[in-house]
Amino acid sequence: MLAGPIYKRILLKLSGESLAGGSALSISTEVLDQMTSDLESIVNLGVEIGIVIGGGNIFRGLSEKAKEMNRVAADHMGMLATVINAVALGDAVKRRGMPSSVLTAIEMHQVAEPFTQRRALEDLAAGKVVIFAAGTGNPFFTTDTAAALRGVEIEADVLLKGTRVDGIYSADPEKDSNAVFLPRLDYAEVLSKNLRVMDQTAFALCRENELAVHVFNMEIPGNLLKVMQGAAIGSVVGGKHD
Image (cartoon, rainbow, N blue to C red; front, side):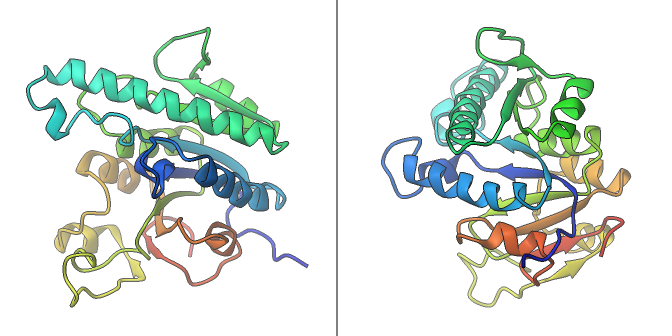
């Protein structure tokens, strides 16, 4: 029998790069299949799921190829890239038999519904996997900030940040073999140690609203379910919940 979830409503932040996997293509159907399998495992526990996904596999405003562009134009392109990813993920969720909705911060009615807090809460309560696209709808803000904002707006228990590393380290473990794993921190520790959990605006939103941030390796199949069942996976920062 599956253990019950430690979180009832989550905001899952995924990078756009994660959709590509090891493929040269910007979106891998194999990765989408694994992601939706992991999502299904926690939907079956009754967890309400909101998702913010980046667009870095297609275009990132702060990137080498955008350095000569106007920042506002580049950020708008990045927002549109997140919409492509959100539509792809929403379609994959539906093909696995789960209801989903895509809500965008920029109105584009032919593609998805515009975001409102009321619509998001209604869709979550109806059991839909709700995917938030187009960031905050404003340039100069990252998808980390969009994830923190949406997490606060939907009153999520936690912001789950799915990455390709096991959690938070004292330094980048892919560059520093002496990096120390840090399983539990408070907000002040993250700031004092200058740990790059997410950008400062996003982190400030989480801290001010006591939204816990749980960083874990999403690329390992089954990890999402284990996190929801309380396994000692990843690193947790702050929040109201142990």
